[in-house]
Amino acid sequence: MEKYVLVATVGEDNEGIYHAVREFPVKKYYIISSDKNHSSALDIKKELVRFNIDVPVVTIGEPLLPEMIKAFSKIKQREDPTSILANLSCGTKVATCAALTASFINGLKAFYIVDGKVMFFPIMKLSYYNLLSERKRKILSFLREAPDCCSSMDDLSKKMSISLPLISYHINGTPESRGLAEEGLIEMTSGPHGRNQIKLSEMGKLIIEGYLGAESDLNIQ
Image 1 (cartoon, rainbow, N blue to C red):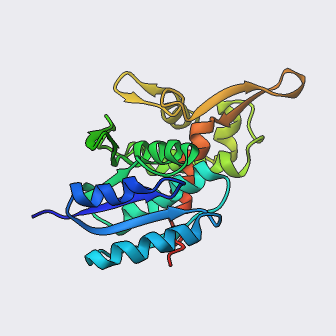
Image 2 (image 1 turned 180 degrees about the vertical axis):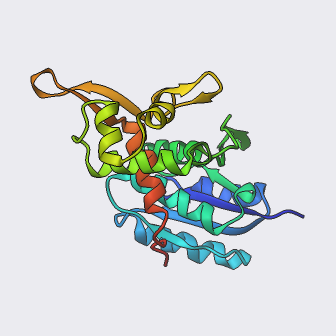
């Protein structure tokens, strides 16, 4: 029988964490908490280990959304992604929304439990990160480190030492391949004195910060 790796956040009502154990054969259960909820997470761990389940408690900080995305990305690197299920039927409202976004970006399945029934969210199985080539990630990383550096693609081309046609290809894409702008990760904005700027969108910031943050290890207890 296939066993799953579950991921859940901690909140005031944590019954959904235990309910999922009755619905799925679980081999590991990642419990994500803030410092505020850490003692509750450890109490949940004590209960779950009685069922011979490995329970890593992952503590994340602020801001919540990018930290949640990083945590999910790190878990995905440690485990078989096809075995991971995100349990969104517990935790605070903000944490649940952050976990849903993190599931989508990482291409992980997610579910919630209503009236004792498991309902799956329609989330893509393909990770958002898989859509980004190495060159696209470098462009996003460059704009993250120097957010006010470039007023045009020609400017970006010179500062990154990448040809203008190649920069245009990665940002604007082609009829056969979506670029960073169409993917909603880069946008043109009007800066001071009417000066245009190429900047990361909010989604672009979350994507690249989650990708870079995944290189470090989890804060597990």
